[in-house]
Length: 493
Image 1 (cartoon, one colour):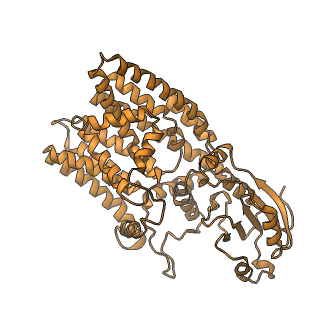
Image 2 (cartoon, rainbow, N blue to C red):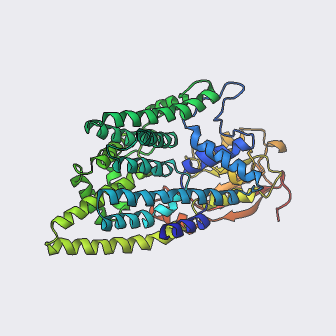
Image 3 (cartoon, rainbow, N blue to C red):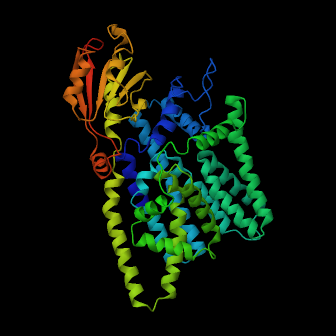
């Protein structure tokens, strides 16, 4: 009930989106298809210019069906749709709690299973992630389900169960391709345990469902099976260093931090010490962590997938260490008060993180523009940055073109970009991101669009402000909306 309660809070209050991927690679794509737009060019074009983007259609396709159904029952409001999307994801995430408890109970005892269950239910960032369209998190229940069936299996387990394990792992792959590292690790353990038949059946189930979904959809769309997978691999090989990079140990520090030291240190210690007894959890987790530690592109969300498995194995291993040295009063006291500290910090973080309205300014800026049905084109001015913070067009409810003027763009070149004297070429709105030198920037823009008038200022949520203060890379600041009266003469009520 505790897990459900906090996830329902996130459903209601945690609006917006967390990252580019959970909004622009899922929701935006699906809705644009429904509206007949293919705004981001994921589908083959009549002129042959579109190319495969390297992303699986499976998870996006599920959202296409869901959002289509919502419109069929007359739910068109973007926020209304997202309440439903978050609700379904919240329910799906409860499987993490269920299987986390069941796996631990099978491999350990009741007390440890209860502790793991509570961590799965109330870990401070889980409710927030539970309602996001983040493939790294959405794929976890499938991996845990397959892992549970594996650890509770015996010699009498039916062959169909092993096929089902493979299907679960294959479905996880169709959501997040890197999960093959984890499921492949389980396959390696089965092979080294000389469970040849089980490994073969799991492999057949995995390959079969990947061939049907990944290969089949790609063939229907692009006339070539697995073309998206091929494009994904090639793109990541060529552009591995184009994104956030860091040293090999960055994920270790990240995991140690989010699991709250010193308990996080105990969990890692327990995970390392338990490798022989919990090989079925240790090897897949290690393979996943090693690959991402080696791969140059390092984004924290990439390793979220293994957090539940790290918690299960690490907690079991640490509890065994504590039990082995139960007569050591110093260790007993350290363990006891470390857990007190863990739960205190965790509960302090839990509620505010659960209630985060992420990227509020960008979402509500698009909602504001949606009140102007005559809008056909707008401009983003963000000359303090070189990386565009994409506007979530889903909340605009129409797929109009826009341009962005960034730090790298010279104003003189911008003025020559179009014949701005022609009214039909002018933007209906100019959105100024960030408050830095806002008056001078507006004044300069008025030399091109003299009829700009202030329309609205959208502030980021409190959580976005805190995140920006903690790390300025989280640029979610004020958005100043100016309306071009030459194009849209009347302010919306």
